Amino acid sequence: MTTPFSSMLLVFGAGIIGSIAAVSLKSGANRLGGGILHIFLSWRVALGVLLYLLSSVLFVAGLKHGSLSVLYPMVSLSYIWTLLWSRVLFHEPFNRSKIVGLGLILAGVVCIGLGNY
Amino acid sequence: MIKFRLVSATSSVIPDAVTTVPKPLASPKSLTLVFLCTVIGAAAQILMKQGANHLTGAGLLGIITNVPLLAGYLCYGVNTVLLVMALRHGQLSVLYPIIALTYVWVTILSPMFFVDHLNAFKVSGVTLIVLGVSLIGLGSRS
Image (cartoon, rainbow over all chains, first blue to last red; front, side, top):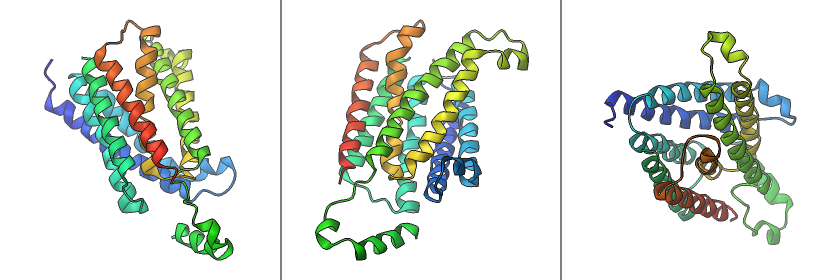
């Protein structure tokens, strides 16, 4: 099955937006007061949830056409974006286990994508 | 900035011998919560797929009377709350990649619920993800 460029673009966009959603949730979590109810009052958390929804809409739209073996690896790029944002915005340094671990995860997602073909 | 203030405040209180113990990049509680997220996230995906397969196509009424679909949405809601709680005490770059375990549960469980089967690619994928997540988890202890 050939994968249209539009599907790749949608899934690529879903990955980027998904990683920004994670950043928004993290920055909300960092500012959270005590008590579980505060989660529902944080606009950063709300923005994160909204971006996740947007990301999943794009992801589903992208998956309608095209092969999972191409599209799964593209969405898993969101793990790389998140690693980059974490370093730039939250000053979380890279270390060997994060980078090698992420490499193994990406390879695993590629394999599962191939297996679903 | 908050993080910086916390560090300087504790270092003046806790003696040097204690501060030399490396602080984990994510607390055990955070790691457990994210792990739980992956299980609930997988349940959400399977429930929603079940719901979508049995959708009678009656528009909004079809959706709001579809129990598996609603249960799936509920799981996603719980999932988000747990994820935010997890992110409070750990690095995003450690906790976020762990979510990839969702792929593992969905791949293993799908053959039990749908017309689906495991193959060599899927088994190697699952193994690689488990190895990667374990490495990140172990590396976060110091």
